Image 1 (cartoon, rainbow over the protein chains, first blue to last red):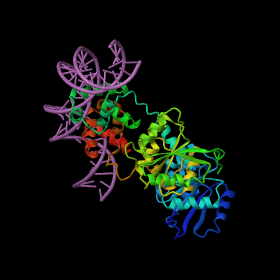
Image 2 (tube, rainbow over the protein chains, first blue to last red):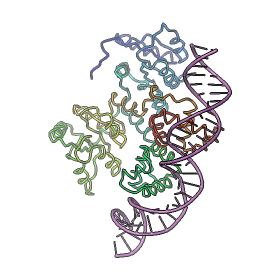
Image 3 (cartoon, rainbow over the protein chains, first blue to last red):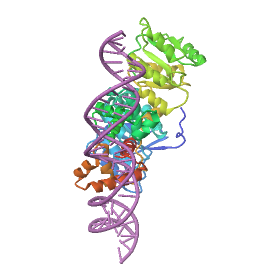
Image 4 (cartoon, each protein chain N blue to C red):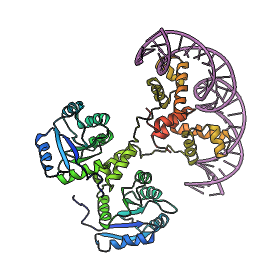
Length: 220
Length: 220
DNA sequence: TAAAAAATACCGTGATTACGGGATGGTACT
DNA sequence: AGTACCATCCCGTAATCACGGTATTTTTTA
């Protein structure tokens, strides 16, 4: 794996309320000169206060505990990404809390690490993050995929026939009934009938609703 | 990492149209007794014909080329997951074709491998897959995340005013102009004007198009 | 082969939309 | 004080849509 970033020192900060753990991580990087873990905070509030001063330029990578008192790591990610989009954020989590990891990723986190990770694990994750990759282990990658697809795959197709699905697609593309008829070489009336049936099956009564439902539920 | 599945032989099949590559992979597993790569196919059609016979029980893991002649690997995944949901599918791809990898994952693939992967890489991916994890490297994991979170670009809000955005939302919810007017306690004409402006800004000329654009580009 | 499902076609009417025009008061920034 | 922007309102018309019918042909399935 090519490490494009190994040529320079990577500035890394950590937000972790457990003083012991924060120090342990910091110490484990003392013999890693290429990772400069020079700032530690015990809360997001502390972090943002520090970042508020213009002279303090943000780091390359932020290690952030997902469960923090006060502003949680999940909120912290959102805030930090809003103010400093360039910072790559890696979450720390004690256990595989899928829901919180998911929400952190939604808010812009690049990846996450379990707290029992070794210094090497952390180092690799940091390199991944600055290289624009997402340090997520296969177990969580699967969970993330499942969570994403959990909301849509029961792709209930409402019993739409192939023709109806085709017409619904064209509707979503913004074609009028007449255009659809021309496009499919059938009469306007036929398209009208199909669309009537589509509305009935989707339980809607306007094109807008049908388009919204089609897109939201991935019917096409 | 605990490998729950190392205690038994893992039956693996491969679908790959390049005979040379298929054989290379097969040979590289000859000295891996725990992986039983006992069936190779050069197309999905061939695979499904073979699976059609009841006596042929499906394997644990399927290695499938993403770009196949005839039925593509992407369609193959869908079909295979529909008929044999228990099979874990790992895609082979020559280059990092994000769109196709994404669609394969959407169809139920567990992960993917680049074609320059070593036998060890493949072996690890196979173990990940049977363990219910998703063998996806950090680079692609990031791409997948980005695709899911359809990067809401601050660039393209089309200059919609708050009021216009509000009305666009109601439009997406399926309300008619009249209903929107009632809901906002303004006249029909006002809503009509706003929608006219929305259409101009979004460069569309129908409600359907506006709804589609709003949903696809996360304008709301 | 009979029945069911799908695709096709037509009509009429009232509702709704798309879009051209024009107009007014308010806020906000300069 | 001036300008830009926003939200509001009105008119008219041609086009389009929603939806209630009815009906034939083709395809699929039992």
